[in-house]
Length: 174
Image 1 (cartoon, rainbow, N blue to C red):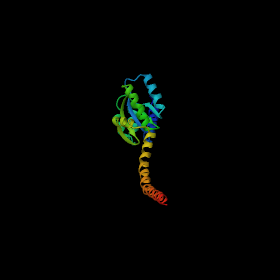
Image 2 (cartoon, helix red, strand yellow; image 1 turned 30 degrees about the vertical axis):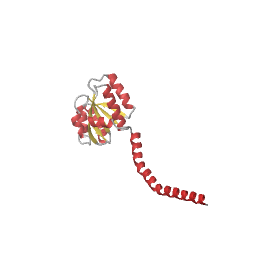
Image 3 (cartoon, one colour; image 1 turned 90 degrees about the vertical axis):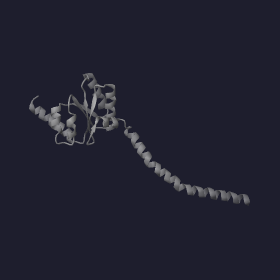
Image 4 (cartoon, rainbow, N blue to C red; image 1 turned 135 degrees about the vertical axis):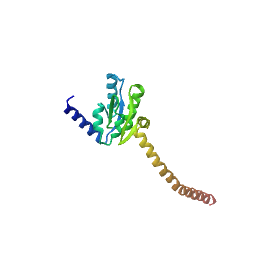
């Protein structure tokens, strides 16, 4: 490959690494071309771009960026999964595919600026979807408020019941 092409690819990778992109490093040794095409199609639906990169060029590009922790993961045939959408959905897609096809190995990555290992990617994949997490958080915030409303209305409710019973008693007496 001519040197200007390599320099262009290094600059392109450097731009991607310097941005606030989340990515997962995978090893694709043993995957056929059809398997890679299927994986790319699956990931594209979740806002993930899978790119096979040369380790030498990736190492040059990653130096001096926030993603320097990737250096140790750039060994063997590597594909980088650049996540543009929901990180949880992307991690779930990758781990589900890796379970179905053991040739794909997740090595780790950088998620929202923090280096993560393969086990952490699998832990993220085990999280429920974003909507479920938001519903749980909203329910957690709503529970104390509902309890407070119950506590505050309790004495008023009790007073109305006492007054109603007193009124009924006086009506019977009259």
